[in-house]
Image 1 (cartoon, rainbow, N blue to C red):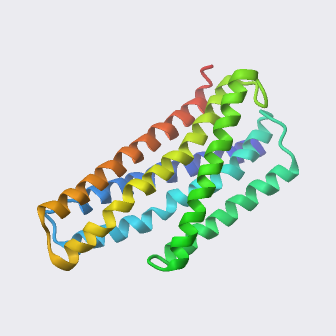
Image 2 (image 1 turned 120 degrees about the vertical axis):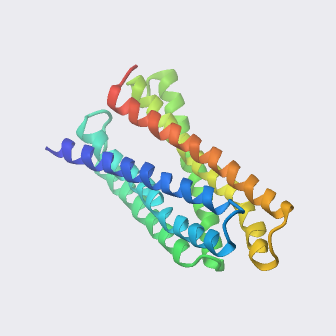
Image 3 (image 1 turned 45 degrees about the horizontal axis):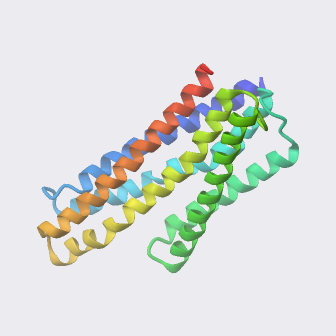
Amino acid sequence: MAVEIWGYIHILLFVFWLGADVGVFTTAIYAKNPKYSFETRMTVLQAGLVVDQFPRVCFALILPVGLHLTKELQLHPITTGMLAGGWAIGLIWMAVIFLIGVNQGKPLAENLSKLQFGFQAVMGLVFTIIGLNSLATDSPISQPWFAVKILLFGLVFWAAMAIDLCFRPFLAPFMEIGQFGSTPEREEAVSRAINNTLVAVFTLYVLIAAIGFLGKVKPI
């Protein structure tokens, strides 16, 4: 029964992750459209930032839930300490996400964002190395499909970092439009930043879809 429950929760996290990200994707497209008033674009952007909390929370919970599912499926020996560590990471990460969200524009949010960025870089490296080493040596993971899944999960961390990096140049020209009015140069800067962000988001979609496919079909 436990494997079905953790598997169900795992699926729910994927559904809310991808579903909410589609919403964020859509709001970004509207926010960059100069045909709408700045007030409308700002409202859409704010709605997108709220919805964006859902995929971030799902990302944070995927790790501990994935550890439970791995244990129940007997894919790899998972100790109580590993489960406790996974939940500690997930819950602390969720707290950081919440604090960043409610302190937007404040030094605390900026500092926590930097901390989160460094954390994602390290986690991405760890999972990528585990996946590559497992494919090369069958250790610590012997199943090829699971090793590739772990490798892609590492890349998800870096794709999430790319989204944040690509979005940063959007804010300054967008706020200038609100303060001083629209110009071709400002609109071009806004559009370029959003387009780059959408490429990173689409990359994340592909990675998550591939991870789900590997977990369900186990083709290798």
